[in-house]
Image (tube, rainbow, N blue to C red):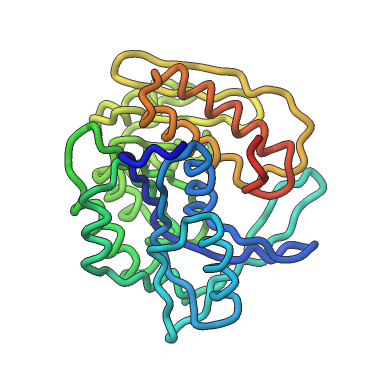
Amino acid sequence: MGHSNITVAALGEVLWDMLPEGKRLGGAPANFAYHVSSYGIETAVVSAVGMDELGSEALETMNARHLGSHIARLSSHPTGTVEVTLDKKGVPSYKITENAAWDFIPWSSRLEELAAKTDAVCFGTLAQRSPTSRRTIRNFLEAMPHDNRHLRIFDVNLRSPYWDNSIVAESLQNCNILKLNDEELPIVSSAAQMTVHAGNTAATARSIMEKYALRALILTCGATESYIFTPEGESRLATPHVKVADTVGAGDSFTAAFTAAILLGHTVAQAHEAAVERAAYVCTQHGATPPVP
């Protein structure tokens, strides 16, 4: 059922979440790619792992999902890990190992070829904490065709202390779809050097969308609602009430379902519904990449 004419790439960290119950492969790009590929769309994760056992296991897992063909192996740095602790409500906090392989994603002619045929790419802030990966991400975005049909999705995903205003501001200039949550909105407005409309979330979101001439701005407000702002109008949907197992990867699955639906020719409203549905399902399951029904 593959849509062989569509290619999606996800740039950034590949890491093992070291959870209380054991390790699980994670990182926003891998989560995003997994959910996009469930729609039969060819997807590649652009990252790096170490020449260690965790690196071999990561590649095996990614290759089993047909996502691993653009992951470099480096002898110089270990595969990324994150210590994850969950609070009573299942909300995660993270301690992210520094100088991991994914901080050193090498640029290559193979990546340049991938970028030239990529219809949509997703990138965040975490993998831009190091100059090497930041440069590779920037090169990839520049090597993609620059028109509005090709989606450059900036999923903000702030992980303190691994971002600063300049990374956010530059990423805003390099995207045409912005995805963020209500906690990130004031931070992004300030990085964009814009006045925050106090208490008026929609006005703030709309002015960011207009300043950067975005095709869409996706704003999620946790368990309450989500919005998609486009130049043509806005879509607002309530978040379905579900029994939450954990919220890990829910945001990534939202972005992925929206992206896949748009690439498959659906309207923004239909894509929004698909996104809300997928994220709600992921919340009912353990982990970011449960089997998709």
